[in-house]
Image (spheres, rainbow, N blue to C red):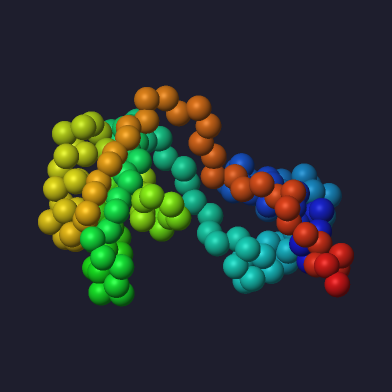
Length: 160
């Protein structure tokens, strides 16, 4: 469907997926069953990928965030497979992006401190050859959200 009601449901779920179905349905002015059907449809289509709990990194002693810029030694499927396995096996790495421009990959890692970062760095370079590694540490988090903008979501009826 992907109409204003779906956007309202998604907007609420992105901010608090723990709401009861009854509360969510009331907030978007639908019956419980109609709301449930819309959510199920969005889950089945893959629009809703999952529902998670957001944890406090500082309380888990991983309050230091590092952005790690990498340049690869080569560009082959063998290297990429080895690299992909390496980063997936390191739990402190919470994001990996292949980039355009001067760097090949940007990693986001959460660690307790610089000493823990050094250990992560050593584990990574033991697993895969890298041409260059440059890291920056977050001093202040100004904005961080998991909520995606919904105003680009088009009504499929208007696309035809």
